[in-house]
Length: 160
Image (cartoon, rainbow, N blue to C red):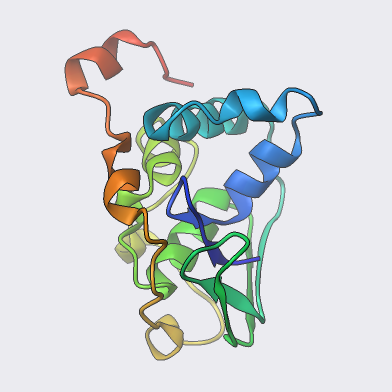
């Protein structure tokens, strides 16, 4: 389900697949702060191939999601073979810059898919007509602190 989130700005197909693939009691280990959770989602996505990404946005959520947000009736579903593209288009439709969402940025940067909206072919509805400005989670300013300094990032050997 398309919704705002308290740790990663928006929870979409990649985040749901990554966290959903972890068995309890290990799920809590992925949540180690804003930089770590975004990198951890990318690292899991790197090893679990997705053949079809789906984002249910018939009833989305904005505000203090993923639990205490408000319903947004979007009336649409997104699907595609490139989960990074599906999530980038979903984030864009929510009014977010996809490259501001850490796990989308890392997945794009390290070659798991396309996140530049201009390079993504959308079939069906006009995304501009469906786009709306979602109210972000109240922790959005802290969530944007996921970025790791370039010199450290290059030493982490994250390439696929």
